[in-house]
Length: 301
Image 1 (cartoon, rainbow, N blue to C red):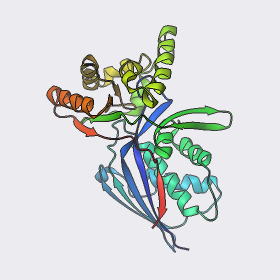
Image 2: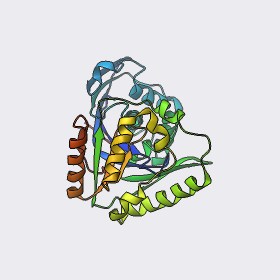
Image 3: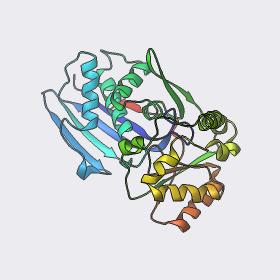
Image 4: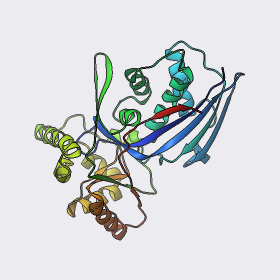
């Protein structure tokens, strides 16, 4: 039976300062995907939106590879299909574009297989993590809100928490990009004991700040594990983070960068931060967003 489904996946911001490789939030901007199962074998891919001119339209497309991964893991033959994507998440900017593409493929496969195979939330997270390599970006893309992700003997796990309604995210997007692989290569294999303890305290505080006490966001977003090490590769990002924090704003590198996430305590504070950025360097795109609470959605069209 021919199926046509629609998938929406939010952008994400991981790390959130001290929650390195563990914490992430979903943001109210996202990519969309329509998939139609064809009666004959074959693949058609149409890409629109951000980065469309540089994205492959064959089997190497990340969404197609993600769909194929799920079918392969379930021992099913992948049918012919036509994909149309609408990309709104900037690429290589630290907003989880690759994780969201992977989640889009996993959700598309789940939608196409619905009725013959039922996939649990743990299944979806496992398949997405197998492709992404770590769950901190794919967890909020899948489930929305604030997520804490970890891995145990059974595989990746995550816990979703509701974000306090006063938290007002501001995402600052530059025109330049950053390689996640390069960013990770700048991390030392060992860190001082005092820095590890510092981040443990701040990441614990960050959970409280995001869920109950947004007035603590500035102190809760302090970090000593990764941002300073990566700053040498993106000096403009580091300079703007330093400027914002010097003014009392809870600014952190979004994911691997070079975008910046500012976790503001209310809309008024967010407007102040946005005005400061405009005065500092107007080339940064200022996105006034909300926390996405739904995560990835799939529906029959």
